[in-house]
Length: 559
Image (cartoon, rainbow, N blue to C red):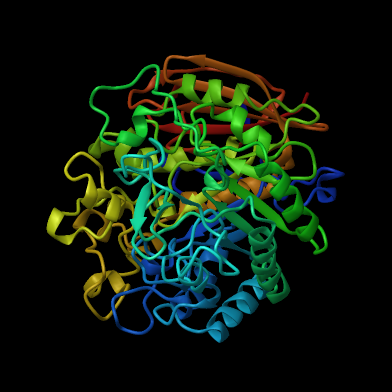
């Protein structure tokens, strides 16, 4: 394959041995007619761990605002903020005590408004998390609900009488361990909780609860946000008959949680959930350019996700879990996952993430320590080649790995409850290393979670000046997705797998971009001298006769 001609030389932003080449901006007619989120790159921020501005060891909204120029420099389209609402922080913000206020730990509503305004001035959209399946037990709704069986919010949560022998009303299990029911001596009933005991389940079958949550959404829409990431939507509604879940037909004997020994047939995925999502979509469609992204995790994977994003009346997209918890990344896995999302009418638009605040760092799951920097670069290149909207977790652009948090420093309630059999989520939530000063420039105080030396060595300041750094490669590949509508919007064609090699074409109208990846550590012989293609990018080294280990190439095809 031939490189860009000397008459229109590419911009070289790295040495030849780590080459990444970008020609001039390519445009395809019609690409601008799609909504901004279709094929966008979204950067997830976990506020506690991004930047501390107050000196208390916990990240906050002012800290995020301070770093927005950095985020914009990554060439992403939007940010997603994990919860910053008022909360007792038993599950670090996912136990909401007030949906329409900022927790003092993170700042004030004025701080949020300033963040929003600055993000918009930099061309960044802003998504906020919405947690509609449960609240904190300190939410005023729950405090009123548990006060009696006949008050105005008595039916706002899932309450049930005990079985005849006083045990919970059925066999449902909590994701964090133990029964999904907690006895309440005030109401003399059990209340349901899919997660921690302090996270009671909302009763979304109640129209008043639905209207209250739509009011929450309207509050943030009126404030100017550009969309929502919807937490744990598969848990939103339960079977009102409270039928027992059936046992899992097949299970691993080493499974840690009782939750995993059941099919959650009745405790989640009620058929009325999409009806509520249609109400939410009716609301969001009253505003311009709103994007709704669903978190949906289930045994039947893609089938469940597609129910939530079917047609044009529900969620805009949902991200799959195919990669988030996979123990390895192989060409076969990528090809199989992409085959479930062909470019067909009514298929829906997927989203993809390799990492997030709940999943272990991908470089630690998928690669040996000695190859992690090279792997981090090719992994980011692969992410932008997938059909769908893509989500980058903070620090992924730096190649951060999973930090090892000893038990006495754990904060994650799930890991504490299931120690030592559950890998702590804390290892993916440690602070961003900004520079070489104390605590990585994250805070002047001891951070709420420790920053490991391996990640401290990947600080932003140490990577900024190196054109071959993981950070600068990330900037380049994210820019590539913006430059080529085929990568952002196109179908996948000619997907081929051979050993560690993955080949796929992204095609949009007259533009075709061929993507080639070596996802293994060994160099592989390779030769293609076609005159009908132009090399537009290379990650991990370029050679005329081989594909180095953990490398990628992108060509624009002239046919």
